[in-house]
Image (cartoon, rainbow, N blue to C red):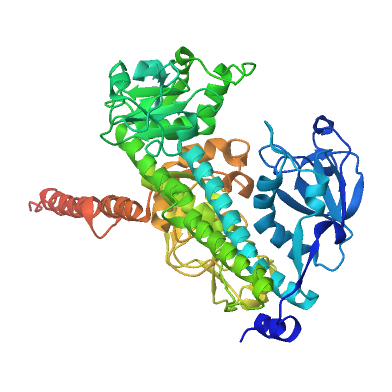
Length: 613
């Protein structure tokens, strides 16, 4: 038996009393017109909309339940504690007696709206009156029972709120990645007017003659599900359409709501109203899927906004002006990769059959089921309920993981990502122990690298070593093997030279060590920076031998980063060339050395003559 069952059995096994709402709290209304709202106001201003506006004056300072008194949101509930203001058709409930405020809130969420719709004054706009609210009946079990019910229902609503917050975060993540992927500064792309890469049409201007069956008819309100319309026109009326949708077309809202899109991807007859534009892309240039994501992105939204008639009622964009928007687009191969990626994000966010929306929907239904079970117990004195604690482990991405995800996403779509050096490795500089102190140097065992040794390219040993005492006395850092070292300064052409470490060592202050993260192969970084030697010298401070690199320059230095697999492939090729060109035991240098010895041998043979006596 659950705790709730025990409380009911002990405290109200025979049922409970019902009271009028007017006997359990004070019911007031606000005094203000809805136009009293102010931008960035200090206090919430509750009107008949679902979400409060802001205002700079407050009329209430209390713990209240607020009810929208008219309009499309009639009966909508809010709760608030503190200073706020209210519209003249918003009801404010406070000073509760006999009832826990949150219990009352849950009960009214379940039963107030149906009560209002039955009893409201009928008119063009539904509204409620004070007597209606005062006479609304509320069950009043003992407070202990109310609070246990609240605890259980709050667990459900908390979980739904967490899932909703996670869905909101997913949508923001989708929008962020969408706008990154469609950034013209990243894409190698062309830019043309939409009319140059697609045909733009609008739907029928005739008021539909709806039928009970026939060809489905869609308008703005159907854009989220263009195949789910319950409105139809006759086949004869549809035959008059000059432009019928084909697979690969794109619908876009153009009146009232601007720029929401849906891809037409089924063999079906579908009639559409003037509030929708039909966009038919040249499929050898751009795809409908890509256009959908582009038009809904920041770039596409701005293009549409420039040409939208904002003073029209409702707002709209003319068909011909749609064709004037500029579209940046890459190759078809890259378009498809972008769309595959974004479609997956969008599906998680929006598909009611999978992902978070389905879970939120299920949790909401679960909440409603248990709410109805809990809040109708008073009529019978019984309840059937199993008290289950639902734990949910929320997987919160760290900033680091978000960076990695973005890098992998860009690598997948474009083949590489452009990243700052400081994002993919740790940069540290070294130090020199005092040279006048023998205890810091004599008998040392810790390899210590000077700036001139960077010219060796591969550091397997160092000329100098320092003692533990010398290491402790300085601010130098132990650098692990397979790091990359770059000369910040140095004689002649040393500045900008790079080397790789094959041993653990520390360095002097004229060297910067780059300790690579997992997504960066140290040999790839070595070859990349080696190829940028002249550029690194040119961007370093000063010129000639007086110039110098610094962490301030290197941390934001941008490099091209392919996937680790591609990095390994590049390194394998460059390693072979490096061996061929530089290794004295193999490749051309060895052959040159052999030819030199061969030359010297024959030279000596040829130039050594027997003396004639």
